Image (spheres, rainbow, N blue to C red):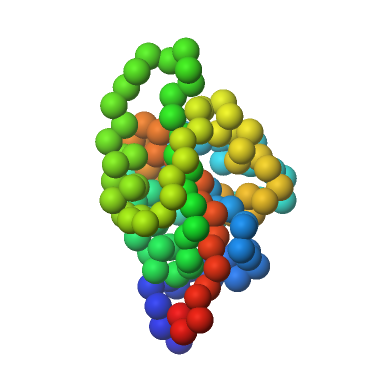
Length: 143
């Protein structure tokens, strides 16, 4: 039996294969889960229904499972109409002390297709720009 917050076997196996510098994409329900990442990226489907599970729920478990070194959020394309994106404040609040970067929409898709993105988690997230690209950090002594 496992101790710790995560029990999803496929997700645990994928995380065990990831290392420092590997990236994990927590993707909203609108993200192109198979064509928006590199072909070697492992798809973890947690999108049971619209709104279930959302990115924040997955992040809550994930941040207690692995060290997170950096987070990158998707922002609107430069030519898009400005919109409020409250989920980004939620991400920052959930990861205090983690460095955040912002990547515009089309560049975010390119970043998600890079070879070091090893896991994409399809969620039921419905909020706009609810995509979060995480870099795996280093486990500290005593953890």
